[in-house]
Image (spheres, one colour):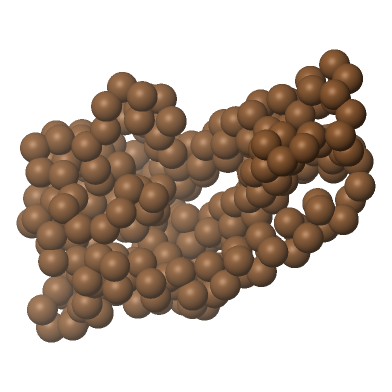
Length: 283
């Protein structure tokens, strides 16, 4: 767990250093500050209201305990073990097996499960999935992802400005010297690509951490490991038809069909590696 937390810290530090590097290349900081303010405001709005939007996007309905007693029991027990308030429980009307957690902090959190995952998994397997999602809440992964998205967003915004500068008369003035062109190339193309790769690495690191945290909460890695095996097969045969691929990072497993290129740029680690790590934990 400490290793994954350290990895996240290092990756965020690299992303911050990249932002400072972009500021240095940009020369005048006015554009950088403007981009920063704009993206921070945009991400603050996302941070406070995205949970409502994503639940609405997937047509999630708050579940009634009488209808889903086992689901409520699992959420309540795991939340107690994690030492966080009981999150709200939602069910998504989809036969594709999946789940996600959302909310800006443990006091304003929700766990959403598809009908498909409730029908597919055993009680122990579903409890493992719930522990994974509640670990995301306890570890404040939504906050961490928002910080990463904000920094990467500033870098991408400045890169976009640099591309416009190239089209409409150069970067940092109209000089066309070789150093200026190299700076423009680095800023417009290379830095946003590096920022995206770091952001993906942070997301994958948090997935590994949530898996590890879930196994330690329950003192049992096998429920979640078995659940992930079933989810991989279930999603392959029955991918999500609702929603948008941009929200795939929220789910315990990518809910949409993905080709080779999308797998390389996935926000989730390879399922085989996650399962292997879980089964390799000593309990």
